[in-house]
Image 1 (cartoon, rainbow, N blue to C red):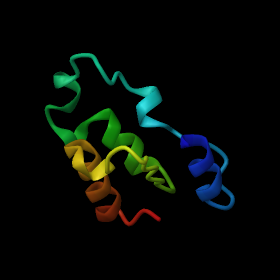
Image 2: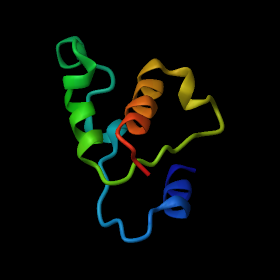
Image 3: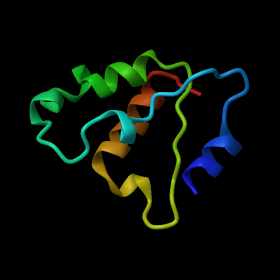
Image 4: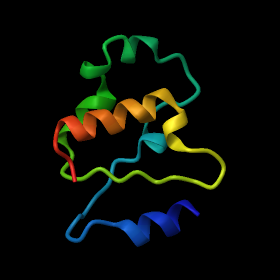
Length: 81
């Protein structure tokens, strides 16, 4: 499901991707990394990206997770496409 959605939505001309769920420790204590969300490594990656691609799944809305909602806000705030 994930790969199908990514491939169907891939931005024309994009050559690489940073995938938060694969690159960041999802189940470890990351409180120090996100104590200031705007200065977190996650925010730095998103801010430096040319595109932001949200990949939902059929189980639950990504916007039910606070961090996903923050990433959407940050993408909007930094005029990502």
